[in-house]
Length: 366
Image 1 (cartoon, rainbow, N blue to C red):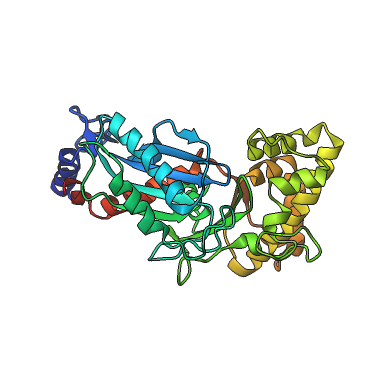
Image 2: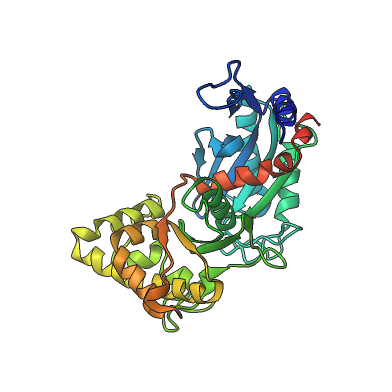
């Protein structure tokens, strides 16, 4: 762009309250000094929310993945879709009312497949929701009923998507996936396993938003039963429950399961039983990753959640299993790296909520 065009664009973004432009240009280089641009710390925000198997997380987010401190809440006593989404909407509305910043929209990360473009939840195994629950419509309705405060945009746009897809988007834009052209993310949160693929900066979600349901890839036909009715799925062989089962231990039901599983994986260096359990689960994870590599040919794999700790506990073993089972063998190793974004599901939800405004910044003024 010419200097005049850049000035006009930055002036528009500043007028919309999205960025700040410093009053003194930076010097020291050739040509005219340039003004420094930054995201406005007092600019508008969106509501970013995530439903986990055992709780809710809600926050406000500015541009660029900048989260306000997230609020973590227990699941409501009744977990049917309407009451669950009402709890999310009310928690987000409370944050919007208490903020001095204008709120422009909301997005929700869900631990189950979400169809596109209608936003229905399929196989919501954690909460036994009816297959085809219209989550996008229900979430929008609950937000309309909530008191979002006088600074919220009206009408108030909202969106829903699968949590692994949104985590992959966050890692690609702000974390370990930066610069990758074909990024595969595999994660295990509180229960189950999710996956996502980002190709040239865009999520690959398939014909209806249901691509990359990697949790139902079979890695042991005689393995543990999965909620889907099959046996030996990546879901049931490499998640926190699987790690405790491999160690012959029972997690404390009064504490978050994921945190306990991550601590167990980190204890593998000192505890032989934990080490044996990690190696068993890593072998199953490696089989699953190798199958995905053969099909998708990614240039980078990012592991998050419990899988991040499994990678840290046995990096050479995991890489060797993937290489041995990969079509291209050890000469075609794909980098396997740990995730970097904290609260990646929330950051990805924020990116989804900001998407209309990134496409058309003038919509902020609407």
